[in-house]
Image: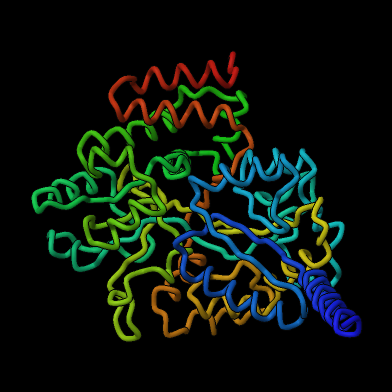
Length: 431
């Protein structure tokens, strides 16, 4: 009997030891971003995770996507509590300053090896992901941000498509919106609950009128260095007011987010165009309008204030990844992020319809000759001449006041003059 108990005890200890060894062997790397709904990112990361786990036995990568509107509700409390993920994206702008200043991000410029830096190329200095000359967030995909329209819907309303990259004027969009409304449609789907949808478009309107381009006059205005009471800012506000008041987008757009609601309704063909769309959604476009022999979607720049306004659109990075400086798995986290910046990762992104940010080691001509016609047009938009607008700023409070002012203007509770007066006050302009 004693011999039986000793044998049983040995078996229990052996099983316990085995489970302990297994638990000890499995390391979990948590990765999070705001790319919910972007199929190309999801598919590319699935490949990266498979490759990374195969190269690192006993390591498991858990990847979670949030929407833009819910992401910071998770991320900032998690970081503050010390329970943050090992790898995470940060929305460019004021959030970068907040997270860097709190000591949550690894300085990639200081810690990346020479191979990784060679892959990054000029992106090692990309302003929206850097602070004080150091890169803190590794770029993943690149994009132009513009308007997309269904070709057949535009033609059905009796309008001709502009030349590639060009756009309609504000007044032409008003006409398109009215023609669309007569058929129970929207001219443009719009999701202004996500503030970038409002602020990015505003920046483009400003730069159409910016005689000092490429000087960043919007940044100067946010800093209180120049007055908001100038035609370039007034015209930008009036362009928004004209489109809103004339129903280019539906009145209840003001309660819509972009990434799920506006995009989803455009996918369902409730609107002719989608406002503030970007190449990061190429992989999620309706397949029947992006076949190997036919493309039914046209990319164009932002609405033009007048017919002689220059084309304006945003060229920037899409998602990004940073390494948690306080992660117990920092070295593994860095290796995972490095993998996503590799030349092979660039081709993986491209294979899923995402324009890779790191193009130094990639054949651009080969990229623009893929079977994905919409992807090819995304590459062409990157090369199209136009005014590239800075859309990422660190001045959080002035940006919030501008967003609130525009939304209040849409609601009819404030005027263009009042928004301008308020912005001069909030930015401290005293000239």
